[in-house]
Image (cartoon, rainbow, N blue to C red):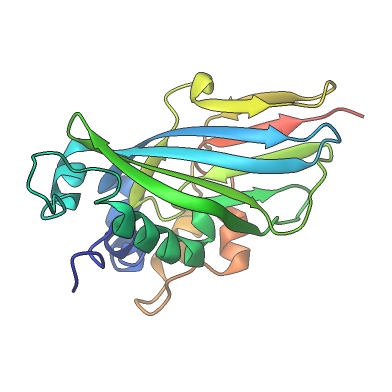
Length: 220
């Protein structure tokens, strides 16, 4: 395995099916998340800007050997290949982001270049995703930013870490705690074979809401 192949998504997303049982009970990688959700004046979802700060143990392992000029500082430039590799892999998993309402799912794509930084022994991955086609908010938009298998624990500390810009006047935004996963859904997740690296759409829909969600409601 190359240095860049040993990324969070190789360790987390790609190995999650092998460790689903333990992942449900306890994540192996921890992320403190921030997100900024932007709308345009017409109520169309414009972008979701993410900042994911990884736990210290994983971060320190992650940057080993990346200080190419040996100056004692791992710069964003030295981490750019790692950022690109991460997002290329993460795209195959929908960027660990589910966006939808009333049974709809909004496809997303990467916008601009991702960026990694390393400070205070923790690495932070910054990237922005946008809808593939323009999407106007309806009555209840649910945005989940999480690893469904819970191998990577992505957590918003509080509502201030899940910001919304240009929220339509009639709408409100709430950070909602996840609901317990049912035994049936847990068993279905555990039943996935080692050759399954992306959740079936039906199972992904059942898992929506099992972790924190940003819910934007717009009463009519």
